[in-house]
Image (tube, rainbow, N blue to C red; front, side, top):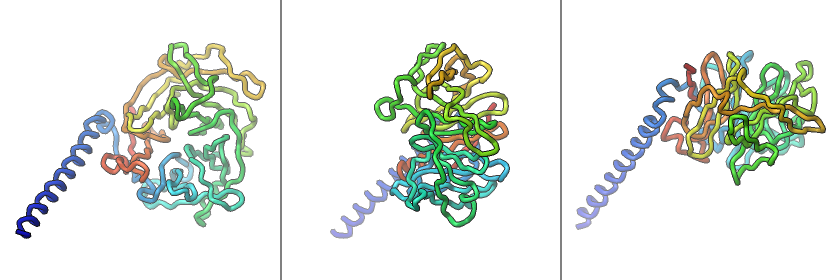
Length: 327
């Protein structure tokens, strides 16, 4: 009788395991089919750093003259946030723990990262926190905060191009609100809810020339990252939760300026609109796209779906950075 019960239980367990494996395979296949248009034009480029460590993926940038990429993120267990050093063509990564000036753990969200001059810029609550690039690269596994650069908006991501620092705000109704002044109806009739501020940088010092931006871009909601193409286009990556990500490509030559301004530090700063009138393409991508890199016609996407915080990326394609080839 005991043997019969054991065999019966064993059969049920085997059936459950088969059912679970089938469900996982179906989930993975379903994700591939849902984003068939994306995957048919994308290739896996490199492994995501820090999987299974409690690291949550956020920022991502290319340091072209050093033949490497840097990624940053926060730790779900409240340990020090990290910068991962990712040599091109290799999955042999190292990481650096970030520290405050007093030696305590730096636990910032680290939504965005870029390198300019001697500094590594990382987005913070009141602007950008700056770490020395040499400190990040010196091999001791620790980098210490040197200074903060305040910005008009609370940035979630950043990009530096042609001596200009762009810092953008994230908006989600109820969870991540933005000031009423950021909410604008664009010339195309879009309801934009966030902004990007643009600051001139001084190549000699690696710092902004002024506390006041020279331009403000009005943007849609859910923006997690941005980059520029070689042919005068801006790409915004939008995502939230399990919803589909979007890579929104805007034609810079078609951006409309209507004379609208926002007052910053007593200065009326001109506003430019990123809206459907200058939107050239909307590429639908898998959930949780974070910061992006553009290089040689390809958009490289880092997402956080495979981190311990969300896990489901292990069942899909979240374990790797994908490069989407622009058509």
